[in-house]
Length: 427
Image 1 (cartoon, rainbow, N blue to C red):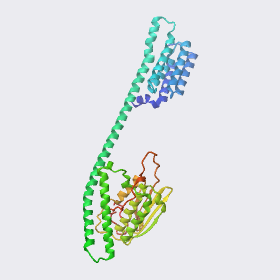
Image 2 (image 1 turned 90 degrees about the vertical axis):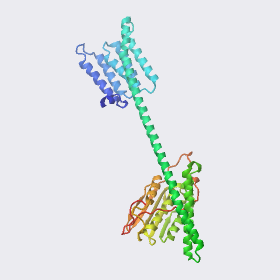
Image 3 (image 1 turned 180 degrees about the horizontal axis):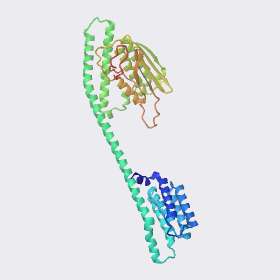
Image 4 (image 1 turned 90 degrees about the horizontal axis):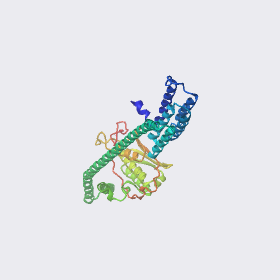
């Protein structure tokens, strides 16, 4: 029954009109064999009705007015009004199905009734009554059928809207449930990680005070480990505060952004930390990074910290790393590569951590794409962060972010092959 549905589909008006015109031609050619042949006037009025139906098939109200005018002319000139009556009735059906307002339907119905009743002027009462009943077929049936189709179409539209609303509600509930679950997991992770980090910081602090006559270089390592652990604990507490009561923290951007002017110094600190670990780092940092927005600035910093930490872990302290950060037409071009001349820590399990995965998710949030994989004997990670789309004037920006950002710790990137390249699995 697909063809039947198409005939009442609003988009297939031309198909309906062509079918109607072909039916009219068939009536004139074959339906009048038992009657006198159609006159020239009847053919002219029929052809005009066919042409009007085809030309104005997308303008039902105009089609109705034209068909009603042709019917009025036919009433005064010819005896067989079948073609013009059917054309006017079909035009009324189209108006009923497609009119944007109900008032248009009733005005069109009234127009056709008035035109039909002009054929009964001066007739006896019994013929007038017969003509009134004839209006049930010519006017009543098209209006009734059009209203049924119109109502069914409206009910179908409402059903689709309800289904779409239900789908959106289900997706919203699913996202909320996933967010709640992630928050719970994050809090549990904090409880576990914070305990061990606090224990490490405490022991390092004790070692700093108990051990005397240490090599200054060892003391610097103790101080660095103690400071890093203390900063990590502070970050953990801030993040969990947001997870437990996100509405109570004014401006989450304070934890997800960085003051633009602080970015060059933060990148320099990340490079210095990698050099302290023994990695030779060649840094080419565009001074234009100081003009980046806060969110992309933090992304660049976190990507740099993660990548350089992975170099130290997987390429070894003798590795040579190259950091390149440039700004071109508002887009940030970022890349870290190494020569792969290092060793593989035996303690790194197959599969690694979630460093690359986290980097990729952070980049995709900013509508970029992270490329990570072996290159030559080493490993390369790069991306392009596109320029942000200007936000509406009323929307808040992330420019109110806190300038204090501490380097984040990094998860392992994964094992390295014996030839040198890093494994391409997420870390």
